[in-house]
Figure (cartoon, rainbow, N blue to C red):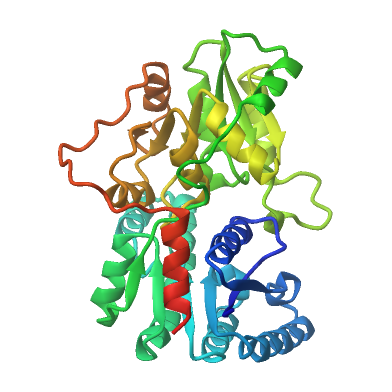
Length: 399
């Protein structure tokens, strides 16, 4: 039996760790021995000089371990490999060199700058709105650092003809355009089987405990409570809906945003104040974290799922993937990540879209839900499933 290693954050509470679990289960079902070679994020994400030295030893140990496998896949999210750009690139390249049969998954391979943000920053500066201009400028600067990290990693990948997996055609096209590199496969993130059976028992229990009746409409926003996911917009949109619509945030603060001696996360505090100011205490509920199975069952049971994401350069969303596969009605923003997903998987008929930040449109389309029309082209889509995803990872990681 051939052995495959997946380099990832396995024991952490994050989307990458969950995806790794899904990959291991689906690849193991194909008759392979698949193991996670886990990154120690306490070491890799530290900026402390002594800890960084320990992180280097940790990476070297992982490299030695990877030599024992018939194939390797590296799950690349830059933040998993370091805090400083140089560390991220150096550590990733070390791991890529460790085994000749290696593939890499690029989850957010952003390579081309968002010129619209820079233009807006210049406009703000010309209008003497310096604080807004500086905020946009430094946001753009951070994005540029991320792009430079991606560029260095992908240049190494291209020079060494390393099998590459991305989640969108846009990512593949950018890599081909900038590096003239075509050894890139596209597969959207998949977390659930196409024939998955779900149940609504946990939502029924919640509704009973909270005293909701049959007239209540439950809206779910799922995943870590991060600013880019649009929780604030969701609260705003709720004000445009009748009182029987209830908004539930299923998720917790992201572990990597927890700070020593911080009484409350600033974004969560902002949301709490917003709820209180709008007098929505009886309509907005912070539900906390649920296990993977409960999470999927809740996503399939609520009346509506909201994905009010802002544009942040991501190419894929595990939360969105699950919701489009199991939910009854999904309202998603005009983020490019969703554009790209719908270009690949054209047969979803359970969603409607709204402009980023337009809470009025979100509310209206929730109340009078009409799903997107299916494309007139009846050519069958390629099936993207857990099985096809597992096959791709096996084929690209073992020669």
